Length: 311
Length: 292
Image 1 (tube, each protein chain N blue to C red):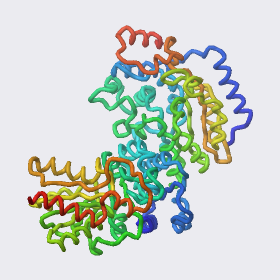
Image 2 (image 1 turned 180 degrees about the vertical axis):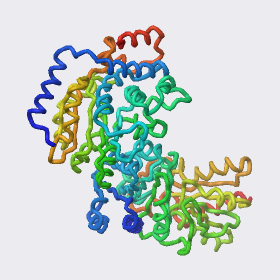
Image 3 (image 1 turned 180 degrees about the horizontal axis):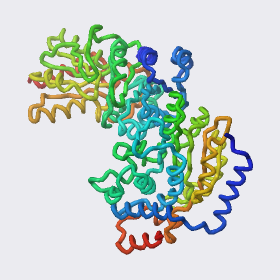
Image 4 (image 1 turned 135 degrees about the horizontal axis):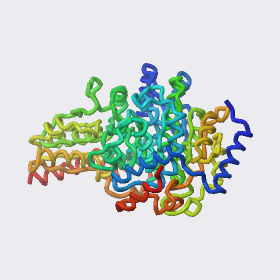
């Protein structure tokens, strides 16, 4: 996803002179082609995220469209006030490409995990929050970011994640993607968890529980139309996210349903990371298992909850 | 143009002299602008008077004689950009902008009011002539250097001026920006530190000593000049020397100022950093101090 998103930025910069790239202290050779072709629009500004966001704001105020890239947690927590005031309050077209959203940096420990990033980004007015499921979808969404008038947060997965979105998908930013039509139940997921939710739905199908999957590559603004349409008549909704439960996708969907369907919200269960700092290392998959978020665990949990409701 | 060593020595000597002797009285224009700021203070029944009054001459000289700007066309593409990074000093900026005609003087009466455009910190979305919404301290230098980068990319000759407070530069982000501007040798970028030696709680020496301040900016890659920030002639001379350095270094001006300058009992008095709910006789006393 990272490679794909950065190659999209290179292409955007080639065709639009307003596009500039700002990195912090990225890996050697990052966007080398960009640096060689357009050195005046390539910035590598060191481990100074507050300054990078302010500088991006200054460039955007003068008509440029900066794409800023560094590790997700440092792009959100470290410079939150600059993101809130300089980018969101001024409503500037700055794009934040966040490496390693969720549990990607599992071996590096809790300092490097971005598990509340979507929550704190979606709390800010004017911010658009994207979490594509795979590199192919990243390739379809990043070019669209050029025309978004305000700031955009783009959460990246680890890379090499299985491609689960349809190659011919034409969805615009803000639109959900139906990966599987709903049956009795519906998974609503985002980012790489949509692929896991799809695998869980297939396991459930084999066990006789028809379960759809609505993938939301845009966490803010939510695709209200699709969520309201697809949740109509389902027996249970399961939200799935690689994110802490407070403030995440499950919260966002709950808020929407409570606001729009007062007294008629279907049973809704949120699958995500509990409200505590992870206390293990290992791999992203190991931590997802640890938090009950593997496809098999999602299927088991969904089956148990759906069965309990049917009874 | 490069300022000569003797120019810096003269400016510094003058700045030092100003602070060893009692400062010269303010002229009519400086008193007029301060009275406008008091109009705002009266209108909002609050305001950072001390922080505004230390920066009046800096703002005055910039808008009167240095900045390329047009109050009838605040978004003129080739204007120089000024950011009041110490946004809480906004009454000084509002006084000057109103005086220049960016908005009617009557707006000062609605300072901080529900239906006003002039808030307790400058808002670029509402106020003609304000480039960026500041007030969260330590943001202006980075935004300003991004603008300076933009001018360079667009091959334009407009310049960027950022006025910071002294307490403000406690913020680490200021020094991130300083490193960055130094690295890029943004000689179209000037930071002016309104060094009034006092922050909210007490003197800067007590809260977080900034000295040696000139050395700090120099070591971050700036060409630095010190000046008496209330001496209109000295400010004029220093600002006319920009950029200070042929080598392309960004510019820092350490403007030695007096917090609350112009009101005898507010000078160097942190009680006047921010004031609210002033009685009518207290407001009247402020105008009396600034008569003429």
